Length: 238
Image (cartoon, rainbow, N blue to C red; front, side, top):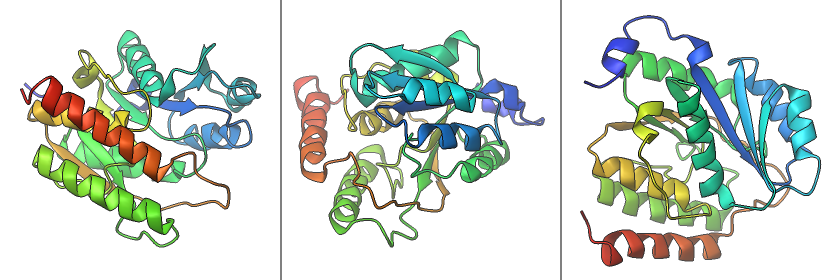
């Protein structure tokens, strides 16, 4: 039985939702992000992925718990560590968002409402309904990857590279990831898609800043292709 079939019949307890924020050298933004999240949900854990600045201190000042790695494990490793924490804490849901302020915490209620209304266990933020302001190369890269992932999963994923997501925690218990960088989020969708899980999107408001994104469209596209090669060639489709 899908856990959501029983859980969503009553009001969602905010104390059973863990917000996981991977962070690397985000001291300038992380406190504001955490404080914004805590306007909606009480439990926030920041995975400090080997930062050399004051990311951990700023996250704690904002009210987050911090799990710090002494060396950089990559976003994939940081996410898995956050998922394990959610399982240990017996949470129902985990919500992920980025530390750089490009995800607006005010969109959190949209995810919670969609989950309560539909019971769909994987919800992905969608900025592509209004991509104005997204750099052209990132927009084209996102669209290309999203079309391919939509075809491979059999689901409509217009913004598959968006890290603002909600998952039912139990789906993550046996999740293993080979990817270390931003392609890990694509690998998550592929692995969950193979299990036949329902997925849907939540329209969110795009936020873009003047500073340069840490995503490299060319390098991360190459990592994405290598991830697909591992999953669909070296280890077989099933």
